[in-house]
Length: 500
Image (cartoon, rainbow, N blue to C red; front, side, top):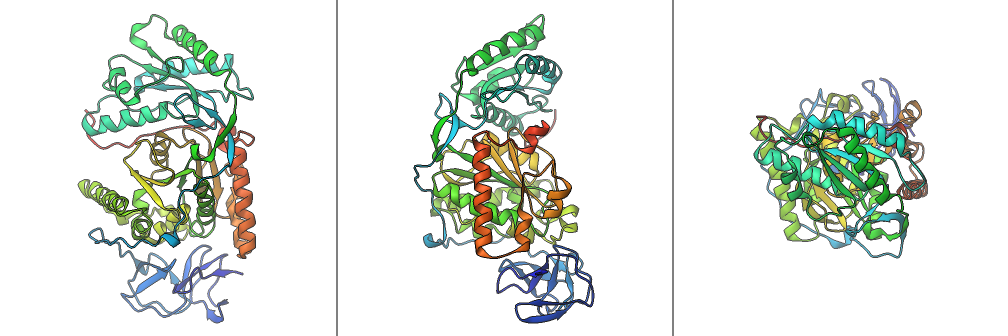
């Protein structure tokens, strides 16, 4: 099979390998002679499409033809333009039989139970600055602590998480930074946290503590650099105390309801919505039906597919929150004179994605048919099981940091173009195509491209079950993700305001 028509109503099909002008392909029972070379993961027309007519993929509009398109012709950004309408009005049309609700399950996983009721899947000593000025001493302390306290079967190592923020901020921008940092500090993957402050920054300890809330003083400690003579010695003394507190931690069986898995994608291509995101949607349904929380962000990559998400809202109040989520992001773009339709990127387009609608329709596949139970601001803690939408950008680093601040302990990340980055925790990465998995085996944890070789239902079920088994092994520490092996960790926050 070298082509795929995704849904019966689609008027384009996808090339599963490079196709060439003059080739004859069979789609359903139709013999089509190609009028252009069709790159792998790109689209070609199955019917004649008049100028101005709608192009359909995933049974939804992905834009309109800017010129007449004949059968067998390449369909891409040279003859296809977005239809996205940011003034669109919505109606709630919910069908409970078409969604997967949070369930209850006796399933458990081995995790680290914390005193606040949360459960981690790793046991790190994290060292986090309130402000970028502390990054240098922080790294020096972290290096010494890592040498003194190497990983053990019950300790995942010292994790320095620096960032370039914390000063010259004000208003909403400062609030976002403080709230996000507090969420990271409270993440259950950190058995203990050393917070390092300079002492004169705007995001000072008083500000930050107001967002952190109640905390275990044996597990969270503070160092103010300007108040100590030897910050390295003082930092190591605090690390000693923190390590003593977490060294006795052990994994215990914990219910799936304590899981929060972040779903995200980056460097998407034309296969992402067909393979990696599609099977991840089945994985999301599995965990949600067993009582877990899964979250999605990337609000700009919901435009053109937002109506589908809205009609999966568990009730009308949640529906209106999704409408507001979309409206708020529209206003955010307009405030800075930008257009939502400027997404996708040049890399996405080279990979076969032509418009924001096409990218979004593939992007939301990650959530499967899960009912949306909660809608959150950036970095706001999740409180509900089911599929949670979190306000955030398509930028991988910023978006995933927001999900981790909301409580996610594992990120499952799909990519078609490839990316090595890790975030503030384990990142399990799926490739949308086998070529990427083979070329970048040091980046990729799971090859979803094998779906392209056989589209049968049984094969899909087997692949999903294999993926779920690997994710459970990751949750329980038996499998280390590529970012963990490579030591790739980083975080970055949403900025929305002036720099003073």
